[in-house]
Length: 300
Image 1 (tube, rainbow, N blue to C red):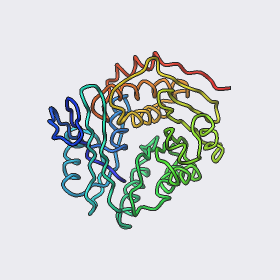
Image 2 (cartoon, rainbow, N blue to C red):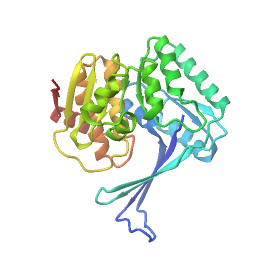
Image 3 (cartoon, rainbow, N blue to C red):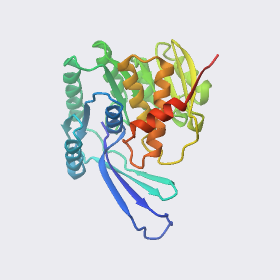
Image 4 (cartoon, rainbow, N blue to C red):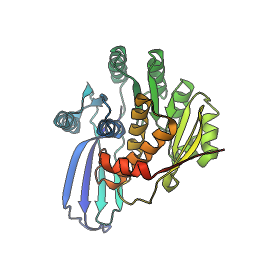
């Protein structure tokens, strides 16, 4: 509902207050949902993106989707699609500038829901990923409504959002939620295993997968609890790492992987995203190597 045209600048070193010389520019259709769709496809999944687009940035976004052969349904909007600018310095330091999304009119939300219902009714959807911020004007229960619509059709749901929309999605029956440590603290007032357990207490049916920074991932669900850690520290562009993690979870659900296997793939995909300078892109071979080196241990 709140896509973004991602612009990545590569520079030698940023000096505050001075003109910056940009050595390379990459422009692509982005935002969390698009990043998830791209990485899921790179992991061997079959994806279909639903996005509301408008204005010049929206037209560029749609052109980029066609050029990249990412299957998508687009909903026309009077809103101008926002942009994000990520500056990557030669030493790997990354600075992101994220525009806020403009307010969503009621009719646009109705159009998005109609497009989603049509996709769900096709019978070709195994997992629905709801990822990214809810724009102003959209109902706080927007993702919860989508979760309920998917659940009614037997479709699993993965939700990556924070705060009240996350709690509403859980109450509606979300299968998996993926907060990071900051979102976990903002939502339940705690992080780490305490925060994960506090969130899951509100929906015992759900699986909570929380990214815990360099400490890796925490996963608690009906089948058990695990901590997954990378085999080595990684330095690079963290933008899109969480989206790669969500993509790995979605692909794992479709493939029927166990949660320890899914967590290995998630560690590998998110690590490969960190090592790639552009959000929404990974090298599957790097992801496989990082997944093999990851450690997954049960939490008593």
